[in-house]
Image (cartoon, rainbow, N blue to C red):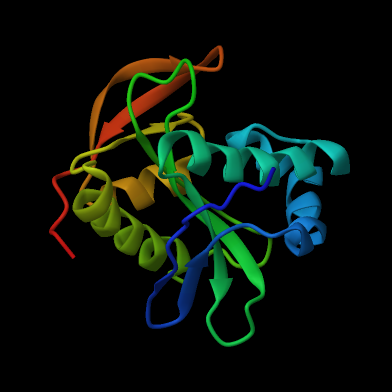
Length: 173
C-alpha cells in the first residue's frame, strides 16, 4: 500500500517550505543531538530523529496540515522547521518553529513563520493559532512578540510548564 501526501510547497524570498525527506536526516539528527533542541523535545539520538521525520509526515496524513522543513531556496539545504502541530494532548493547533544550528539570527524563522501562518489561515482554517513556548526560550518569546502574538496564560505541554502565546488573526494569502 502506498500513501500519497499532498504537502504544499511554499516559497518566500529566501526560503522553501517543503516536506521532510529521508535525506534531511543528517542535519535533523545533528540538531537533535545538541542540548539546544531541548525546547522542541530533544535531545534525541539518530533513530529518534528519524522518527521526527516520519512523525512530521504522519501528522500531515492524519490532520491534513503539519510541519514543513525550511530549506534554503537556492541550495535546498535544510535550515529549520515551521508549521502546525496538533497531536494528541494539545489544546488546539500550535504554530511552531525551530532553526538548525548556524541559521539563527538571520530572520529565517520570522520569514518562514509569517508565510506558514498566512497559509494556515487561508488553507487550514487556523486563523489565530497558539504557540507553546518554554519560559526560558527567550528567542522564541521575542519571535512570537515580533509576529504579533501576546501572552495568553501559563500552560503545560508534554508534562512541561510553558507559556501560551496567542497569534493575531493572519491575513489571507
